[in-house]
Every structure is written in structure tokens, then in C-alpha cells.
Image (cartoon, rainbow, N blue to C red):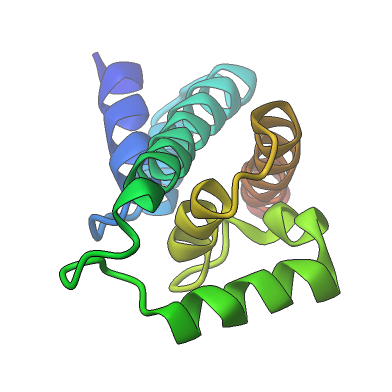
Length: 140
């Protein structure tokens, strides 16, 4: 049951909803959870949450000329310039607080190829959880 909760919290933490999975990951590890199992579940949940952001961004683009569209034309141009300057590699940092979730949303709006998106997001998020668990192992 705790792995399912970690999956859900990881998923929600990657969407535009405010949540944090790191504390739960560490708590479950300290309670004897398998580092590998926790890593897989947290990475999978968090990455799938980012995929929801990408999909929402991709689908909402068709409404970009509506007044209620959540991204102004200026913000959209700025995001396009960011991706032109830093490229899709910036998705390796989708795990960062504050900027990570909007980054995955903008990747969908900017139609970043899904296979590339998933690869970079999983690598970045998996590396983050691995570092957290390695630090936890070295502290014990």
C-alpha cells in the first residue's frame, strides 16, 4: 500500500498541483522499503505526472487564440526562444521545484517529440531520486 501512495504522491507532485514526494520516499526507505523498488515507483509516478502536463500542453495549444488561454503570446514566444536556445535538453531539469512542472507543460505546447520528452524526463527524475536514496544510504 505504501508503494501505491508513493506512486500517487509522485504523480501529483509532477503535475501543476503542489505536492512533494521526496519526504515520503525517505520515510518509506527509513521504514525498510527497498531502495530499488522505491526508486522505480517514485520515478514512474513522477514521470507519468509530467506526461500529463505534456499532454495538457499539447491539447491546449489549439485554443491559443482564445482570451482565456493560460499562456500569453509573449510568454509563448519566450518559451519558444528558451527551447531554441537551450533545446529539449532542458527537460533533464524537469525535476526542479517551481520551474519543472511548467517546463513539462510548455514542452507539450511546443510539441516536443513525446519519445524524446519521456526519455529526458525519466533520466532527470530517476537521477534525482537515485541521488536522494544514495544520500539516505550513506547517512544510515
